Amino acid sequence: VQLVESGGDLVQRGGSLRLSCAASGIGFSTLTMGWYRQAPGKQRELVARITPGGRTNYADSVKGRFTISRDNAKTTVSLQMNSLKPEDTAVYYCNGVIGTMSPAFTSWGQGTQVTVSS
Image 1 (cartoon, rainbow, N blue to C red):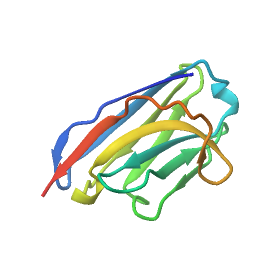
Image 2 (image 1 turned 135 degrees about the vertical axis):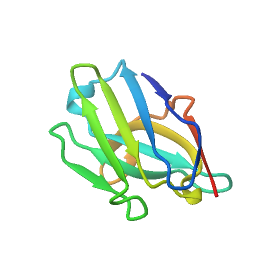
Image 3 (image 1 turned 180 degrees about the vertical axis):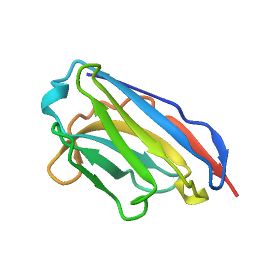
């Protein structure tokens, strides 16, 4: 399993970022994929997920601002983040999703840091 996240940066409140995740070594086209985030001192949480067929779900905190998408041919999953808020500051990770929100793999990528300044 290899998950490589990229695209994080320092942005101002209200700004936008697009995160990307390249996945390999997994049955990507058959997996629900998700973006998780972990803020300092907090538990890792699932913020968005997408089924193999493209159905999406979002955490209430990001609904209407974030959009998850996937390319099964390229085995990539992306997260478009708009109207960013300081509370979105976290390290963002991708992983498969089992059930409602459990990560499919115990091995995580290095993540990508998103910092939103006020």
